[in-house]
Length: 504
Image 1 (cartoon, rainbow, N blue to C red):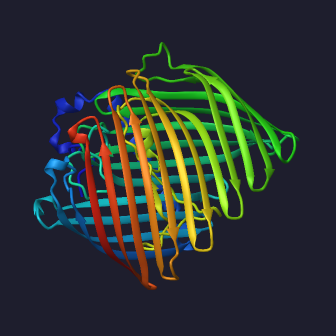
Image 2: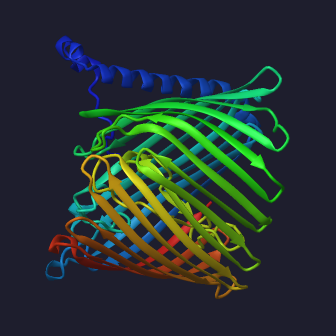
Image 3: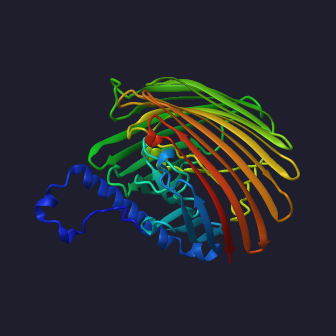
C-alpha cells in the first residue's frame, strides 16, 4: 500500500526541529488526538452492541482480461496497446443491530500488464461507514473512511478507473469521526452537541494534506408549538492545511417553520456567518437569510423552494420529485460554498435508483450499482458552487431506462476564475432472461474555462450472465474520447473486458 501520511517518527527529530513546529501544527495534532480518543472510546463502548448485531461477511474474487488499445492515453499518433490481467480479491462486511449499523467494502485491485511488466501495480480501495449508539438516547457516533485513486487536476490525463497508465494518479484517503450528545434542557427543549473531525490525505506530494475539527450546537423544542416550530444552530470549523494558510467557518442561525396544512408549509432562516479564507472579496462574511415553502400534493409528489441572500449575492434552491407507478421525475438546484477537500471528503459515488426508488443491482457483483461523480477541481481554493440537475427514469417488466442532465458553476474566490460544467447521461438495461442482462450507457461532459474547453464522451455496453448462485461472468466494451485544448489532452481509448466473479 502506498504511504499516505509521511510524518517522521519522533526519534528522527532533533530538539531544534521540535521547537520549530508551528502553532497550527500543534492545534492540528490536538484535533487528531481528540479523534483517536473518540475512536478508542467508541471501541470500548461498542462491545455490547457488536455482540448484539447480526453480522455478514461476503468475500469474493474477480478475475478479468482487458484489451486496451491506448494504455498511456496518448494522441492518435502515439498509441500503445496492452493486455491487462486483473486478479481482485474483495470482502464486504456488514453489521446491523439495534445500536449499530456498519458497512465496510474493501477491494485489492491487482493489474498485470502483458507487454510492459514495469506498469504492474496494486491499488487498495476501501469504503466504510459506521452509525452507533454508545449510550441509549444520549451518546452517538458517526464515522466513515474512503480510500480511492483520483486524478486531481483537470489539466492532466483522466481515465476511467485505473487501467490507463498515467503519472498523475493519487491515492486519496478521507476519514471522518463525529461523536454527538443529545440531551434535554428542562421539559420543553432538546439539544444536540456534535464534534466532528476529518482528514484528507494524498500520496501525491504536490497535493496539500488537510484536516479539520469543528463543533456544532443545535437547540429545538421537544415538540412543535401547534403549527409552529423553531430551531437554533451554531457551528464553527477550523481547517488546517500543510504549507498553506488555514481556513475558518462560523455561523449562527434561527430557523422558524409554519405548517399551514398537511400539504403546505413555510419556513424562514436568519443568521450571521464569519468565514476566513483567501478571497478577492472585501470580506466573506455577513448576515444572511432565506424564505421557503414546501408543497406536497400527494405521497408521490413533493416540491420545495427557497430564496434568500448571502455575502456573495442572491441565493436560490429548488427540489422537485414525482414518483409514478413506472417512471419518476426529479429536478433540483442548490448553491453552496465548497472546495476540493470538501468534495473529496464527501461520498464520491451515488446509487443508481430505479423508478420505484430501489437501487439497481449489478449482475456481476450482486451489489448496488454506483456511478462516479468525481470531477477534478481546477484550483485548490474555496469556490461558490451552483448546481442544477434534472433526471427521468422508467421501468417496464424487463427494461430499466433513465436520463439525467446537469450543469455546475464553480466561481473560485481566490482568483476570480469561473468554471462551467455541463453533462448528461443515458442509461438502458434489458433483462434478456432470468440469468442474462444487457446494459448500455452514454455519458457526455463539457467543461468551459477561461482559456480552453474540455469535452469527455464515454460509451459502454455489457452482457452479463449468472452461472450459478455464487458465480457470474460478463463481457463489456467501453470507448473513452477526450477533446482538450492541447494534444496532451486529446485522446481516445477503447477497451474490451471479459470477467469472472466468484463469491462465497
